[in-house]
Length: 441
Picture 1 (tube, rainbow, N blue to C red):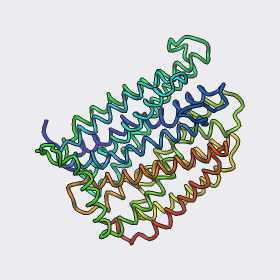
Picture 2: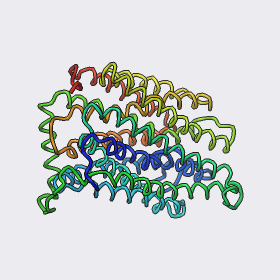
Picture 3: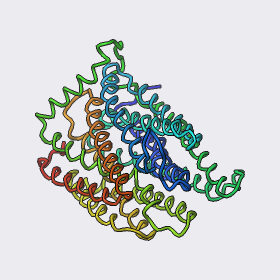
C-alpha cells in the first residue's frame, strides 16, 4: 500500500478510528457494566472481602488494583516508547498492548469471588493493555497531523470513541435487561449476570476487530527503516525521559502546562473510574433493578453529551485559545466536585452526569492537542508523549489511592470527592501562569 503523507485525510481518519475501537473498554469495563457486575458479586457480602491478608471494602480494593496497574504502566511506558522511537516500530508495540487488553477483557468472563485473584489479574492486565496502547496511539498525533489539524482530529477521535462505545453499550444493556431475548437462560438475576459476562467478551472482539482499520493505514513508526534492538537500546527510554526532563527547564510553557495537566488529570481520571461505584453505593435507588438501569443510563448520558462537549470545546479553543478554554473547563470540574458531595437522589445523579459529560470529552481532547502544540520541533515524539503519559498515570495512582484510602477508612468516598475538587483549583492556578500565545504555533 502507498504510504500516506502527513496530514492526509485518510490517515487522520484511520488514526482517529482507534478511539472507536478501544473506547468500548473505558465504557463497558471501566465505567459501566463491569462496575455494576462487580458490585452485584458483593451484594451478599456487605461490600467487604478478605484479600491480600486484609479486610477491604470492594470499591477500595478495586481502587488499589487500578492504582497498581497505573503504577506499572507509568514505569514501562517511557521504557517502551523510547525503544519504539529508536527502533521505529511503535505500531508493533501499540498492537501488542491492544491485544493484551482485549484478551484480558475476554478473561473477565471468568471473574468470580471464589477465585478473585484470577479475576483481579485480568482486570489488572486489561488496564495495562488499554493504557499501554494509548502511549503509542497518542504519540502518533504530531507524526500524522499538522498543528492546525490536531485540535479537530483529536476531538474527532474522542467523538468517534463515544459514539462507538455507546452503540456497544446499548447492545449490552439490551442483553442485560432482556437476556431471554438473546437466548440467555437462568433466573432473572443469573441471566443478567451471564449477559454481563458475555459483554466482556464482546468488548475484546470489538476492540481487536475495529483496530485493524487503524493498523492498516498507520505507518510503522517515525523511523521507517528502524534500527536493531540491542542491550543499550533497552535503556534508551530512560535516557530519552531524562532528556525530556532537561528540555522542560528551557520550555517554561510546557513545564507549567504539564504541572497543571498532572493535577487535573489526577482528578478527572479518578472521577471517571470511580463514578459508577460511587453511584451504586451512595445514591438512594429504589431497587436493585433501578440501580442497574439508572447507572447505565447515566453512563450513556455522559457519553452522548461528551460528543457535544468535545465539539464545543474544539470551537471554543479556536475562538479563545487552548489555555483560556482549559481554565474554564477546570472551573466547571471544581464546581462539579463541590456539588457531588451533597447528591443523594437519582435525579441528582442524572444532572451531575449531564454536567460531567459536557466537560469530560472536552478536557481530554483539548489536553492532548494542547500538549502536542507545545512540543518543540522533534522526531522523538513518543518520548515526549511518554512524559505526558507518565504524568497522567502517576496522577491517577495518587488519585485512586486517595479515593481508596478515604473510602476504606470512612466507609464512604464523599470526602474524597472534595479533595479531587481541590486538585482542579490547583490546575486553574497553574494554567493561568502559562505565558500567553504559548499554543499559537
